[in-house]
Image 1 (cartoon, rainbow, N blue to C red):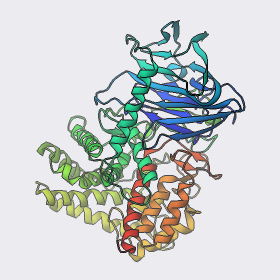
Image 2: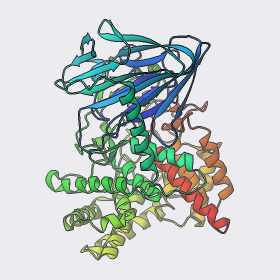
Image 3: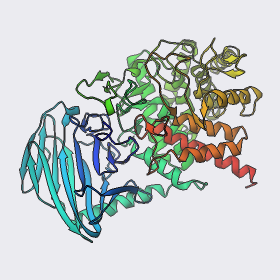
Length: 607
């Protein structure tokens, strides 16, 4: 099993701002869905090595070793192979679509070149459409290979000959030092024309255009702190996970990768969580990426407007990237799952859960982007005000909480804290922009939430704020309490809570969400430490003035990044990365922690 599935972390990410692909350090594209992030997969060998499909381009020599890196300050991925015959490279990228309009045409470019000696490369392109459920036909001719499946087609064109292997395409090319070849895989609708055949000149020109795009975009960053490479890699990763036509950010590029290998905690993260996207606004604005923050806020306000037409809860937990709320969850029974991690789920049933914290994160995002909100229409403000009016009567309910537990609704402390945030930041916005609002009602609700949390969310036995009312279980989501200004970062009750988390949830600076054994969540098995929570822990330590501890924890966490600086959702007991990859929440939390820590260290050093 281990031979058929590379470690989750052994991948780099490429994308075109509408979808993305994973490339393993062995030169295999084993995850790619098109035409959108949330579309059915075309290559999914990471979820089933036999049925999922893949696109391999690597040296034939069995003794070659590989190393992977990003071309500096870009999303252009370079996989280097060292073999007894020479040194070769495969350069992968997707040309970004700069129109901002949704399209069915998406291109994976694979450039192969040799820098020393002579290397023979082998190509195997084995697409499996619709999560491996749809058959396809192959037309092979001088112009390349055409794969035709219901509702979708794909062209494979290369600078070297291809041959048929059933319904798949194979090829080989031998290159000497300085020679270059390419293979271009283009997805389009069934009637889409084949792109022009690749030539050395066109591939070279296109490559430098993509490099220029990413470097130009990154130059707008205003980060001048201590960790520019790490922060900028996180920023590029967030950009790759944003669906440009709408501004919506997906939680991760993948689905079905396990939180515990062999376990059932295997979810589809290719959707837009209100929570993740809203917290990303602060991270993006801190770096100066106003355009991306603005696009998401517009997307968010559109979701608030929709309540007027469909009623019910004012917001849903998550949506498709185009705002569609329909995300039915199904099990792909024919997929064995990553190293036997079954079931593999497409869609996400948590979209139907009640998670009250999302209102706080949404209003928090709007308040962080005050300059943007100040330009909002009167209709947009009315939608926000109506949401808070509704929430004033709806906040005091059990819910499934931030971690999307499937063990029944409970009175989660974090959900109440974020309801307080919704009212508090709503009041701030109304005052700042002098907009009409039922401020007395909002203030009464805010104060009622605060008193309830202080009285029922506090455990005398633990001397800490706890996961749910009437219990003593600790929860790392509460690390956000000082950031959202619910409590002062050096308040004695908060410092006591931080100490309790140190004792119970922290393992060598890595942080667990909570203890499933102490607080059953309706699922079998365990999980690793949550990378998001580790960065929230760093943020909280820095705010509490524990700077040496915060900086050490931050630096240690960097040792768990993969070889190109990416993080998945969790870190397993042996230091391996687990869960969907790469995860937006982790990278935005890295940015938040770095900027908070930079500011605290600057103050300490008198800068």
